[in-house]
Image (cartoon, rainbow, N blue to C red; front, side):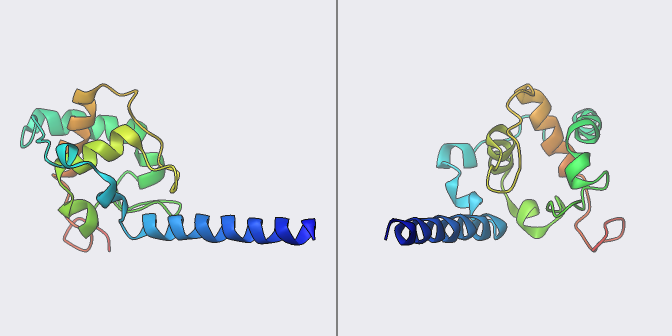
Length: 136
């Protein structure tokens, strides 16, 4: 009887975990971002020097999972996707600060906030996936 209860509990945990992973894969993390974070504005938006600095930071910290071209590697998402392109800068800042433990995204709160904004500024310069210069 105890073994059966353990198996039922294990199945419930696995189902719950897989549901969380599926929810994260379809962008439901966006709904977890508090309104005040969602509304944050990138103070470096559109600044070429910030984008250039962000590219260097991206290559040093993000490219191993998202690829140098930001199209994604090793089952990690493309940062040229429609979901990322339509996320607010504040939502992206929240993700960089907090990470996504369900999908293996570490929190990058050890990077100074300015550097996180530089990465976001750089990402905004990339063409969408499937566009000239961006792979599908």
